Picture (cartoon, rainbow, N blue to C red):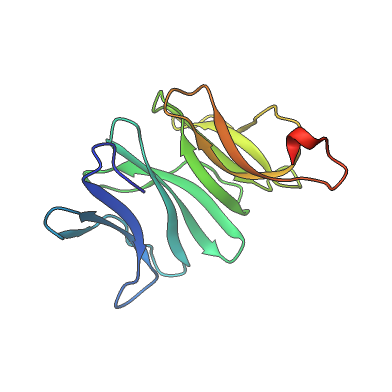
Amino acid sequence: AWTPDGDHLVFSAPRDEGPPGLDLLALGTGERRVLTTPGDGELLDAQPEVSPDGRLLAFTRWHAFGVGNVFVMPMSGGEPRQVTFDNLKIHGVSWEPDGEHLVFGSNRGGSFALWRVSIAGDAPRRVPINGRAMDDPHVGRDGRRLAVAAEVLPDAPAQLR
């Protein structure tokens, strides 16, 4: 994930001991800083996304294969705060322009769909988009467009293929 200034990348990095966490790479100097270190019993931290103002980091912490939750933490460091509590698959996390809400793909309602959650701790709400198996959301910078990966049936109208 890029920082808004384009000078840094956040990525999932292996650890000498323990599961992979997230690191911050300064592109100009090559300096790396550890952002997250998952605890014992966790599988890895992945799918990082930096907030539009560059202050917060959202990511998925996988507890086991197919069992994960969304977390948020300050880019400056600190303890990650859990935002979802479903212990289900998370396919992609994206910030809304307000920096207060996230859109994520999950099978929390059965099949994969898009969900919106406030980082303040409200319960996720389904994004009202018709379709099947939607995930991997990417909210446009201005919040007016949303790109997703979606299953398209062979008999779907041509504009959906």
